[in-house]
Length: 118
Image 1 (cartoon, rainbow, N blue to C red):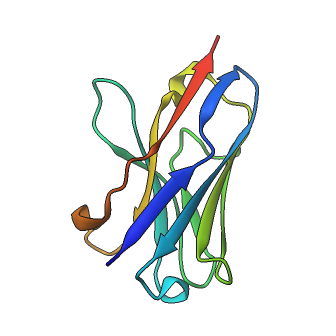
Image 2: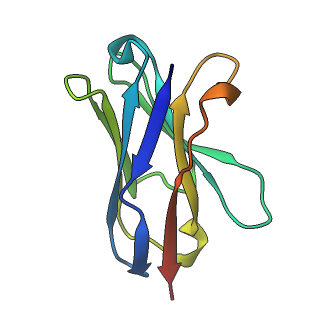
């Protein structure tokens, strides 16, 4: 049974930083690409950043230069370091596997809320 558990969200002022974590179980973590996604109120969920099994990364234009995705295969954990946060980053953040078809809908967790105040 695959389980993805996000943590690290919170309330932060604009310009601040947060580090999100996603602990994975039930998958061979080191072999899969992972992604961080977010969903703001009234908006569709969007892909924020991805990291392949080999460590290659991609970012949405809106977060490029501010966010950094990384992984620790020994801990089955993927991270999202978020710097220079602004109110537009307010959303529930989720992690999921990243396949050629996108995220796996079976694996969505509860997410972690990030709120950035102005």
